[in-house]
Image (cartoon, rainbow, N blue to C red; front, side, top):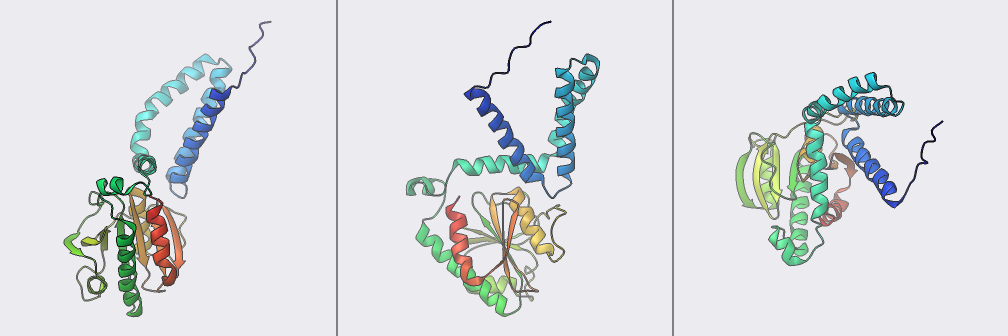
Length: 263
């Protein structure tokens, strides 16, 4: 009887296991609540069965499953196109922290904290006026390049942010009030944009089109989406596919500063 060598777990093997676990967790986090999570679990189950079959030296079944997995890589790139985009964005966002030196932030096209604070106060001032008038609003705050490739129907504005301009754009008489407004640094780039809607199936029924659009743009672009509900007058923030709802207006400026500083 041939003795099998004992399994040796060194530091590199432990790091290997932790790295695979971290990648699988991130993929699960990006796909949970969507139809893709079922596909992800199914593919993971097939791969685990393949590893067991291969370890038991069931050569014919292992060969068939190996061919299936090999061809399945191309199918994965197609099926998980959106999730892979989010995963790459997640990695890219971690490479350039927002608390670096001032010259690095200027090189990346970012403004300093004082200027940003004025922007958030002006933004919230305009949204509070919208709330008093019973208006809804959807604002996309870009943290990198403006998310124009996944947005349609936007009209260029390119104006310095002001509370009055925000109210004017979201007034019901405005032809752009149903779309989203894009804010980069202290300028409104465009308004009236139609955002991609999230395909998540676990959202509560009270979340309307604005909330789903906010989640959709946060899943596909490096941006924060701010929603002012027309029905309830409450604020929600979407970031990296996660939605925080019922945020009080008095805490909104602080939350925006924290989220932008964490970039």
